Length: 160
Image 1: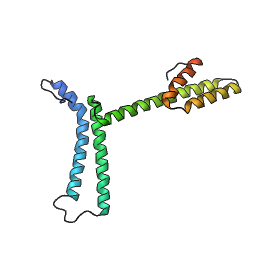
Image 2: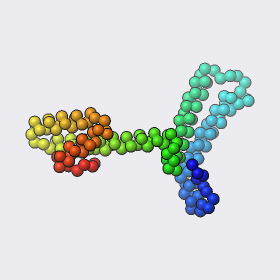
Image 3: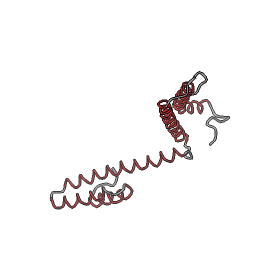
């Protein structure tokens, strides 16, 4: 990935970059501060006794949380910069797409339930309920085309 601030950038370019990156710099600074305190408290030259079992567990929890925070901060920075090569970015994008499909599917199932509720015949309502229930049990990728077809067949628009 190229440098964010390049020779020839304008003051406006640098302002936009600093505005977007300021939040991440603050997050990284907090992580650094906590890591420094962790180092000084448990491994610095002032310490004269080795950490006990409780402290080892505490250190492990600190390292896990710091690593997780660092990973998420880098992921956000990568997404902000449009860099999808960082492994966290791809995971985030895939999860966001899956969430988007789930939200769309849920909204369309709600529309289908409206169709079901508006039917006057109890027998037809039960048939529609059975169809919608079956579609609802499918994974979102399989359910979406089926629920859209159902709505189209029953005179409803395809999108939420």
